[in-house]
Structure formats: structure tokens, C-alpha cells
Length: 271
Image 1 (spheres, rainbow, N blue to C red):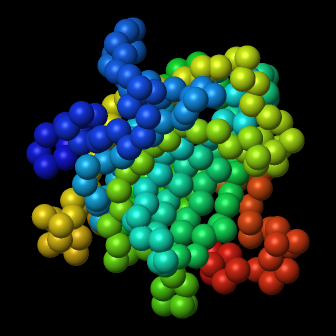
Image 2 (spheres, rainbow, N blue to C red):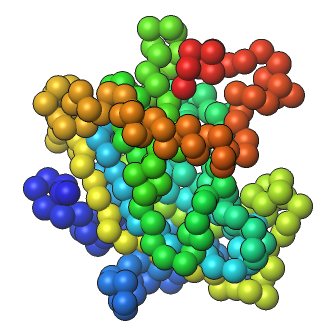
């Protein structure tokens, strides 16, 4: 589990992107973690120092406990190119106490997004750390929670469907106020009397091709993430994936006929 032959560490591999005074390193029973803070003054965020093209990135995250309505905790990859942006998103949408946390995923390919899917997590993600990962290779993109696939976006370029494969992406995490849309479409607002809000990140794992120094890496078929076992879901992964989709999916843009009277092509191609 390494970057350039060594374990990934926060201060060596990431930098604070906004609100220095709202990000702290903590140590305790769960080991060292990075604490992101949201209050009425500011949210906060950090990003990787390098960009990557193909591989797997993961983090352990512990989300805001209790009443987190209106907040968004995010972990995503972004090419930082506005016009033709590629982006792979995990967005954790806060909720009122006792309601399940919803994770929204989205895929931007060649500047086209609006591919939201939402899954209610089947555990309390504020009670402990859980592992969230993005596998990205020439065949598909897989979003996983504790090794359980919750979303697959296949490479269907042969059918004329855009797929992110030419732009390197940085790794980002943010905690911010989004009560205009995050919880029940903006009906539930942030209760600032509960502030400050805290989310925790640790165990950063980046196994990927760093750009620009790893350009030759991106087309290397011997990278483990390009191997036969990672080109499609295993039978066990496929069963878990179906379980999530049947029991925990609460929104799929492919089924939203009000937004898409004609199904987007990638939905018909099988995602």
C-alpha cells in the first residue's frame, strides 16, 4: 500500500486547500487522523499534491454524528479542468438524527456530469471509521464501501460513450455547507446550534500512476489494477453489488424519467 514505494502520509502527500485553522491532526484510540471542521465561519478541505491517472485510492472516514442535516462531507477525484472536467465523486449527505446517511456518487466524463446515484448506508458511518475507495482502470470505475461495490461505471467508449482515461486527477476531500440541496432537496437546513461539525480522515492509500513522472505507468498492463481480476466484478462482488442496488439504492438518474425522458446512452449500455 504505497505511493512511490512508501506508505501514503497526509503531510507528505496532501496539502490544505482552504481554511488552515479548520483542519487539525488528532491522535487517540483510533490513531492519527485528520479532523475537518465546519462552522458558520468556514468549511475546510485538502487535496493531494500530485495528480494520478488510473489506480486505486482509498481513505477511512468517520462522518459527522447526530444531526448533520445540510452538511456534505466529500471524497473525490477531479481533473481540475473546467471545460472538459473528469471527476469521480463520493458525497456524504448529512441527515437528521436517526435517519440513515446517504452517499451520492457522480461521474463526470469529458465535461459531462449529472450522473447521480444515491445509496443509503447500511450502518452508522459516524460511529467508527469505514473504508471508501475508488478503483479506476481501462475497463471500469468501481466505487466501494468496505470492499462492497456500490457503483460501477463501465468503459463503453466503443459505443461512443465518454470515459475518463486521458486526464490525470487529483484527490480531494472537503467538509462544507450545502443546505440548499443536500438533505431532502434542501428542505432540511443546518442547525448551527450543533456546530462545530467534525469529520475525520485517516489511512490514506494511493496506489496509482503519479503524473507527470509516471506517464509510462498509465499504459502498463502489468499494473495490478489492470489485471484480469480487476476488469469486472467477481461473482461475490456482483452478489454484494446487487444486494446494495436492491436494498439500499434510493435514487438512480437512469430511472429518473422526469430528468431523462430518453435514457442516457450509458444506462442502456449497462453500467
